[in-house]
Image (cartoon, rainbow, N blue to C red; front, side):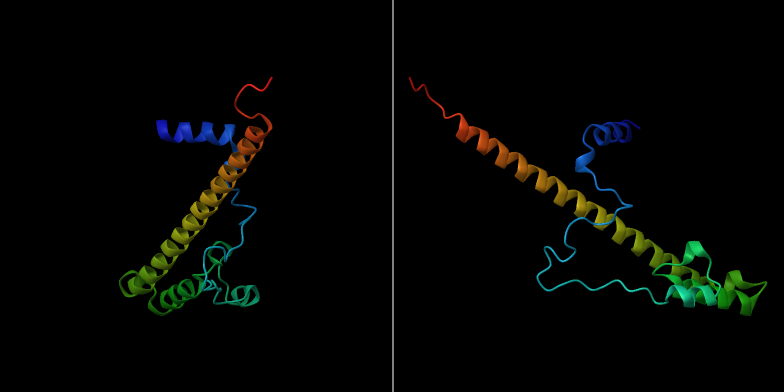
Length: 138
C-alpha cells in the first residue's frame, strides 16, 4: 500500500516525469534501434473485424486468436471448454504479450523522459554555473 501511495504523490508533484498513455509515445519509436523495429500489425482491419462480429473490446492485435475461439465455440457447443482450450490458451498468451509490450513501451517512455529532464537540468545548472564563477573578483 505504501509504495503505491508514494508513487501517486510523486506523480502529483512531478507530472512532467510520467508519460500519458492516452497521448501515445512522444519520442521517436525508432530511437535506440539502429536496425529498426518489427512493426506491430493488426491481423484484421476494422471493417473485417466488424463483419466477423468480433466484440469491440477484443478488436486488437490478438483478434485472429479470438476469432479462432469463436469458431471453435460454434463448432463444439456445448462442450467447448474441453475442445477449445488450445485456442483460448493461444489468445491469452497473445493478450499477455500485448500487455507486456505496452508495459515495456511505457517504461521506455518513462526512462527517456527522465533522461531528457536530467539533461535539461544539467544544462541549466552548467549555464547558471558559468554565470556565477567561483572565487572573489574585486
